[in-house]
Image 1: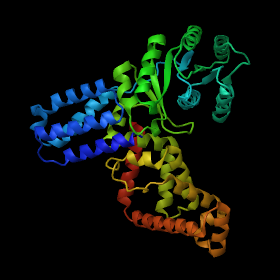
Image 2 (image 1 turned 120 degrees about the horizontal axis):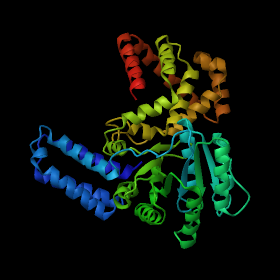
Image 3 (image 1 turned 180 degrees about the horizontal axis):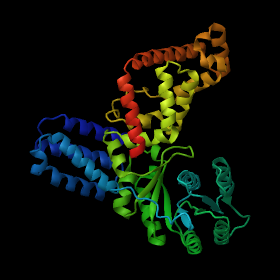
Image 4 (image 1 turned 180 degrees about the vertical axis):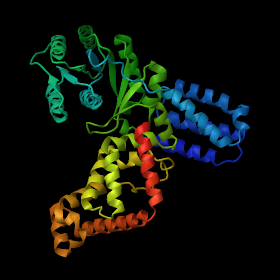
Length: 447
C-alpha cells in the first residue's frame, strides 16, 4: 500500500528525526525530497505546491527551529499537513436510521471494480447491523448481473435483478421490494463506460431521479492516479457526488489519487479497497494512512482487525492454553487462519510502529503461512494434538497429502517446537501475563 511513496517519506522522516539540531538548510533539503517524492507519486502539481509552501511556512518558524526535539516536531508538522491533504477526518456514510430506507448509488467507469465494491460495502454494512439489498442495475456489461448474484450468494446478501434492459424500471421495482421486505439499505450497482459520455450520464441521471439516493459514491481505480481525480470532478459536476471509494488501494505504490482527490474535487474518500476478499474494504482514516506512510504504524487499525477475528474470551482461552503448555497444532492452525483473515502479513506488519522500511526482504511471506496451513490440514486430529507422534512415515504421508516436501514438514515442526519453548519461558512471568490480559480488556472496552 503506497509502498514507493511510503518508503521515501519514511526515509526522510528517519533522517530528519535523527538530528538533534536542524537548520533552515536541513528543512529545505527535506522539503525538496518530499516534493520530488510526491511528484513521482503522481500527486497533482497544484496540490504538491500548496502542501510544500504551507509546510515550509510553518517549519521555518521559531516553533520548529527552537523546539526541544526539532526533528520530531518537523515530522509531526509533515504528518499534520498530510492528514489535511487526505481529508482531515473520517467521513461516515450519511444513512438514515434502521427503521427508514437508505439508498446508496454506485457510479464509475468500467473496470474500476464497481460491482465487487458494491458487494464489499453490503458485506461491511451487514457486519454493522444493517440489512442491505444489492440491486443489479448494470444492464450493459455482459455478466454484470450474474457477477453480483454470485457475490450475493457468497455473502448471504439478497440481490434484486430482473431480465430486462431498463435500469430505471429495475431500480423502481427494487425500492418497492426493499420497502416491502424491510431492507434498510439499498445499494445500486449501475452501468460503467470506458469513458464518460452523454449517453452514460443521461442514464445515470434517470436512475438517480428514480432512486433519490442518500449517497452517490464514485468507485475509482486508485492506480489510475490523477486520471481518477479528473473522473471524480466530471462525475461530481454531472451528479453531485457525496464521496469516493478508491479500489485497488492495496496495489497502489504511488498514491497520486489519494493525495489529490480531496483537494481537487472537494469530495471525501470514504472507503478503500485493500484486497480481493469480500471483507477487504476499509473505512478511510486520513490520520491512520498518513501515520503508516511515514512509518509511524497504525496500532488502532491493527487492534480493530484483531478484534474482528478474535474476541476477549477467545484470547483468554488461548492465554490459558499457552500458560498450561497445552497449545497444540490445532490452535496454531486456528491462529494462522485468523491472521489470514486480517489481511496480508506485509500490511499488518506495517501497522506496527517502526516496522515500515525496517523489514528484511522476504521476511514476511503469506505463501509460507499457506504452506503451513496445508501441512497441518493434512494431519490427523491425533497428530495435531500431539506433534511428538509424527515420525518419519507420518511425515512422508503428510508431505504427500499437502503437496509439500518432507523438508517443509520438518521445518514447520521445528518452528512449532521453538514456539512452545518460548511459551514455556513466558509462563514463568505471570505478572507480565496478567498485565497483558488486563491491557487487552481495556482495549476491548475503550475502542
